Length: 125
Image (cartoon, one colour):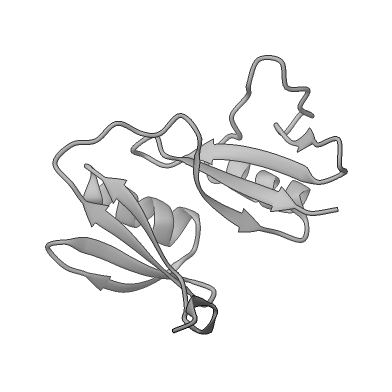
């Protein structure tokens, strides 16, 4: 059995299913595939994203999900136009949109979903 031959399924928790459904579906533009008592299911490219409906959880203090993008400035501006600002971190030099240029030349930005999960954008160098 080789896992390289199977599609990856990603998971994220929510205690606010309606807000999560709006955020991932309308704000981020992911295709809604199902909304059932256990999860809201989206398609992100070839990856299934299951937003699990949970009673409680504490968001991780690090990135939960991320997207590889080709033009991070454009995507960051689109998020800003939709009311989602990139997060700012002490000690990390970020531009006016909140994008950090890594020592290796990749550009990164982080934002949060309605439950406080940290999501990222990366334009690889």
